[in-house]
Length: 383
Image (cartoon, rainbow, N blue to C red; front, side, top):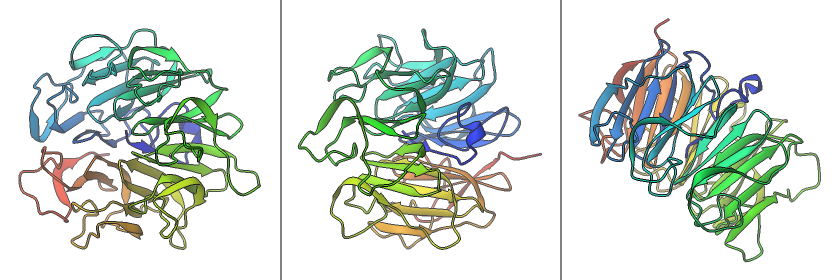
């Protein structure tokens, strides 16, 4: 469900919510309790909870240390997006492959879990993928959005509260960006508007009308008059984020752990509020999962906020909830991602570090200390 966006707009349509992979650009991706990363030589590594097949290695067990993933495709990988217990793979030829849990039909087929990547029928010319807590979205070159998987909260935008194993088109204007939250979806239009559908219990769809679910796409309204041309969106468990063309970050939805980056405004925020970061911070990417969020700045600083217990900050001082705070390991952060209770970062020297909970081996190390960064031993940048 991790949702990340990059300011390198020229690569957005060919990649996903992060500063994403074209050719063999290294990256790190986190699911609920597992991680998949890629080195600059194209090698994929995975570790953590693989019991539902989400690592695509047919072992269906916990993988305690990083292992090479020997996937075979007919084209290069453009991006990988990890849901809670599933993995989506976008190839440069526009096809989409999948593995992992099929509890809600997120494998786009009937039957049980999928332990080795298989192609999703009916999807072609895809330029972006996204996955949440059981539902998936795919964006086609012409701006069409497909949805499938878990639909119990209306997150498929088809007017129903039913799961669906077949990707179907969502009735939307031309879309340029997509994001999956826990049980809701966000889509950015060509004219810079944001549409959402699904769960609205915490106001994550910007609606304060008593409706806990929104079954069809609705347009987000900003509380202050003005021009808000949104370029990309990101979605945490119950808190939503977007970036406008002026570089401002906006947040709304669940706020009991200060997920919006603002305290004193209540546990539910029904309209976007502007986030403020330390002076000199220009946002390059934002990474949201569950109740913990982070940004990476253009100069490699890592800023985290929200529910930052379990040592996810990589420092011994981790409050139960916190406002945006700079936590920057030496070396500068090139890429990062959040899991349910852990984080994974890629430093400029290629080092992959993890921090947080290790109940399901999601840190990729045998020895660790909660609240401190652990070195996985991987070096993803070699050139």
